[in-house]
Amino acid sequence: MIETPRLILRAIESDKDRAELAAVNGDPRVGAWLAGTQDRAASDAMADRINAHVAEHGFGFWAAELKAERRIVGLIGLVTVKADALPLGPAVEMGWRLAPETWGTGLATEGAAAARDWGFANLDLDELIAFTARSNLASQAVMRKIGMRPDPSRDFDHPKLAEDHPLRAHVVYAIGR
Image (tube, rainbow, N blue to C red):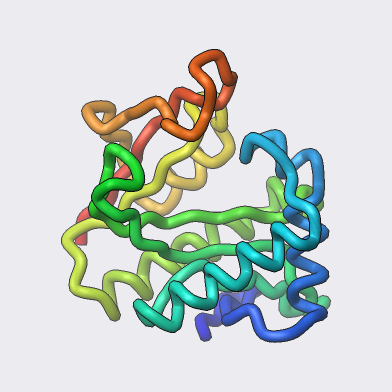
């Protein structure tokens, strides 16, 4: 568990956690940046994959619980990128996905900074990366605020998106230990 002034980053534990996460994953405003929304079954399957990653590696995307409301407002954390998964692998990626009502409040920056610090304190890493659609300026701002820098030599077209998809072009940011 990682605690920040406003968040607790922790495992996805209960059906209540899953329902709250499914609400985030099913929101069309979130889905607009992720090439689509997820229904409850797909969201639960993602939660199972996240928990399996945590069990295998000791880290992963954690449920981002808003302390004041004791409510899951998304995911923040670290995940492995396998060598054959994307042009970037192998690597450890930082990521976040938050409910739209939290956008612009600094929660993504707060949680991402905590995940960054945890990663460098607990994992034998030389760097962390993050990537997002070229058009996602808000996520890029979070990356810059936590000290990440663009690495244009690693930018890529996301292989799971069609050539004409507006989110296909991705930018990569990195931060060293």
